[in-house]
Image (cartoon, rainbow, N blue to C red; front, side):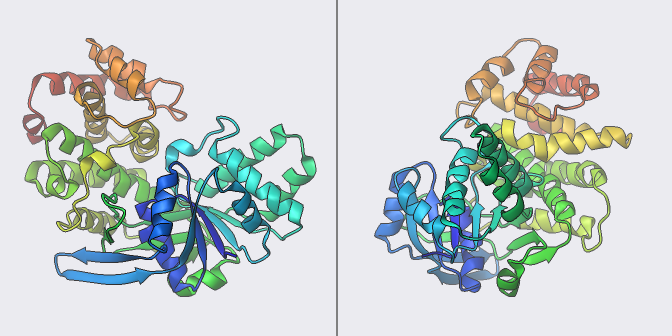
Length: 410
């Protein structure tokens, strides 16, 4: 049996939630959602591995044994349903990236979760917590809403009402820099810093002693992290890809590139946020830059640059739209978005669910048309305010004709 089912068996889960779960004494079954060989390899090593946190001052190693078994969805669906029926199960958590948060049929994430919750409902077991750990605003609320949409389409009102009333969905914010695993047999390297903030929920009696922070409203933490950390991370990654730099720590340590991202943080992203008790935003932004500059992690820009069409809406566009309301200019955010558009046109290693469409549009000759055609795609659920389009187009034109370093020196 398991206390936790976690959907997503990537490096981040292993170096973040699994560590908290171990400290809380919880047993976890983790599920690979895309590849059977990931779960198979993990089981072959008895689900044991080391998390090594390191920075310039040294490193600390911890053996993780909280994950008792790895499954593969859908191969192990029967086993998963059995786990969901067990009264011992306390929560379902997930790290599946932003692009999975949509109803796209019977094999989509919301449909899979609906199947698991159906099994629990039919068993007569009590409700539990469903906690998203992905970098999205109101993440747990969103996935619960999508699950309810699936259930409503299935026309089972009793089950739908049970999920509404008995499945709790406290939003959460997670933070730790974890580069991708390059060899499944190796330990996971990460930074010393780790943070998990969850909205107040009964699960706090178990997780709070392990260091999880519970708060009345996670949104200020969530938005600050997405705009100040993830936004900076993405901007640095696209700059690095264009400049031929492999690791994000090298980009932020560059005097010109690092200063550009600092300005984007302090002059714009930070001003898009409301002051919140318990968060010193200026200090938080500085700490973020120091963490990204950790030279020991070897976090590749190519990994961070994935799925820009899904990520930049939260990381840059939301903040830019807020600045319009506050009548604050956003030249650095506009430049960062233009850098992404230029990257789409010239890179030969784009990893994005819309890669083919984006690349074709980005290679258009007219910068005005490129900006408009991409930033008004239906996939942008919260489109960028069009008052920025001319400024982004001008920046894109410069990127096509001048060296990136020269442009950012201005």
